Length: 268
Image (cartoon, rainbow, N blue to C red; front, side):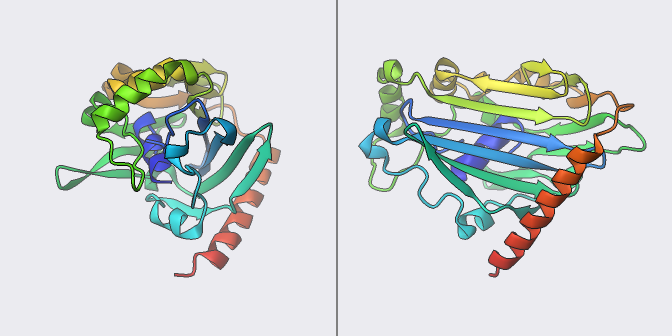
């Protein structure tokens, strides 16, 4: 779970995922924002058991347990939904959803040189500047460094040796994928850091070669670094178009169910 949250951060939301070192792992993070600043993060982690190297153990062990969710609840997250686990075609998948009421309260922090820094924060005022989500970004050191490798108890190989191992396994990593999407309330006009815009959704999709570059060279290979670190980084959309009522009703119902589950289970 720790690597999941770190990867969200590095990609521009909250994300180093416990990758695994094989083509047996996929991580997809989908963010959704509504006009009033409420929204959610859907996190999908997938592992193909038959392709999983034994030295990695179980990358999904403990993922979704309440203690794990509590430990990695970022600022602004008001509830987690009950995790969903499914299996199909050899893949085991875990679906986690984190809800927020106000995107301005969502902040991703990290310890850097013994000091806590805000890697990513948001500025959204639907009245003063509708259709504009400003992003406060302080990730230059993290994006210039390689993506963190997974930590595994009992695995004493150095990071340099692990990175060499990753390169040697390149032919076996065909299914390896990381992705991040952001769905805005309406048609997008700009999304700093993202490489693809499709109507109201901005996307980053990193296949094997891009992920390996991020692991061995720079995390910034995952996204458009110049746009993300540039002045006035933001996501912008057509503010004249409003969210369909049915879509919002479904979200409100999902959030209420999540609140009730989280309140009943997050008892410590």
